[in-house]
Image (cartoon, rainbow, N blue to C red; front, side, top):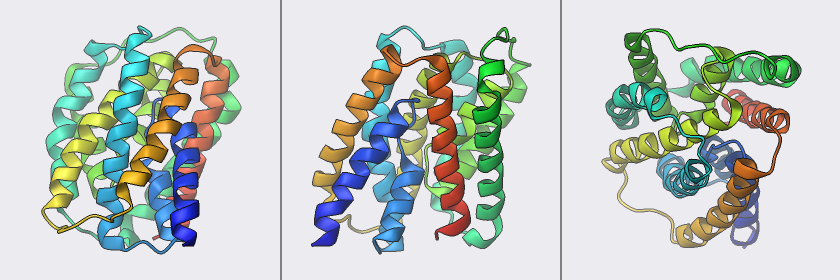
Length: 246
């Protein structure tokens, strides 16, 4: 009964916060399900199903606002999609990679929070050669599939750190990137899962409401500095989840 009442509420809040910065919340969903004792066999596919819905909403909102960059999106997505499927199919012990990922995300959160005001005044730099973006996309996709997320928590800080995109461009690119990778990663996971929880439709409604509200405000009304601080909070939550939750 506790799960029935509180899980949809927590999912709604997670989707609301994450969608403000073009993310879909998979890392938060995983942490929430771990806290509530959901079976580890279905945690990752459930997180990806919720991710797909929220990412679709965020992609629509940010794209309609005119912030999407196709030329920056496709090199990352082209290689990330097959590698995300491969990562989703594999099952590795979290003992090795989760602490490293957690530390990386916490550092990214620290950098974004304390240097966001300074970086907002810097000019946008041109991306490096396409082959490097293709290589980075494959690594992000594989790691995302392994963990069960869409990859936005890795792509967003990279785009902002290298000054390859503005804050809202980053959100627009990340949301569609998360969508295609979540679909690919889910395909790999479904080979190993026979059924999903009966409460999934209720959870989908909760994240849809949170994602719609968050993406609407993030794409149109919130300042770039506030969006960066929100992204720092998202990365902090994801990093702590990787370090302290199974």
